[in-house]
Image 1: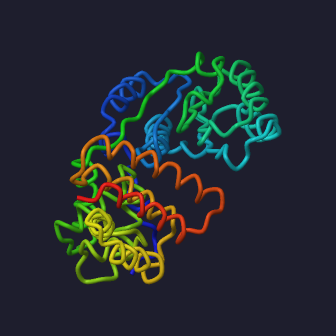
Image 2 (image 1 turned 180 degrees about the horizontal axis):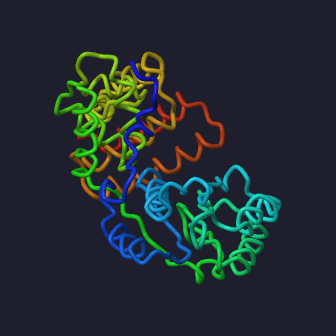
Image 3 (image 1 turned 60 degrees about the vertical axis):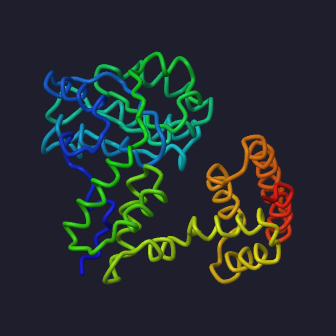
Length: 315
């Protein structure tokens, strides 16, 4: 069995292989044909292809010399001004090999401190003739305006369920996996558009003969939505003892954290057969009890207290 991580094994190598993000890929193809790119900012949630597209772009621009002319730095690990003055500046000032310019990717650039961003702005200006920068971030608003104005900004869209399913089917076919329809749907729900999660879940499940809904939730250590729904339905029916038993099953037998359970309660709230005002009131309570958990409250006590709020809307 190959020990290679599927996240890397099934990472696209060319722009044509990228799933979704057509509005980004189409513009990049034009610049690749012209042989030049501007400074860019890739903004979007995790796992939607920001780093992958930057790597594909470097391969297509530089060919065999892409490793010499491309550098990747994770700004969340090295976020201070020293890394800008040292590692980033050192790469930016050296001449490219077999090309007119080089590309530096700053992953999670929104983690850079304000002082580091000011230093980066000066570096981008000084070495603009030989180095192009790609800033990847989750929140573009955390990047200072002088840097944003020097970049072409691309907003990466969350991946549609159909795109995620296409990726699941691609890996399943290549690895000869037997996966049921409800297993695919479970992975789509858990991944929330993050293709890295998809690859990791599939690799974790690949040791079993058949990938099912229950297996996906078990391997991922996540609550099955049906279990959460059954617990809330019991509370709404006035059967608090049954709701309490199901809560303790989630915490003790399944080993789920309080934060995971409360997030799943939030997801299931909107599908419950109660009126809109009740949903709004309960949503406020969910936010309050999540805050209590984050402040160090005991999960069992806080979640039981939250379940007691559902009794007020007994059907």
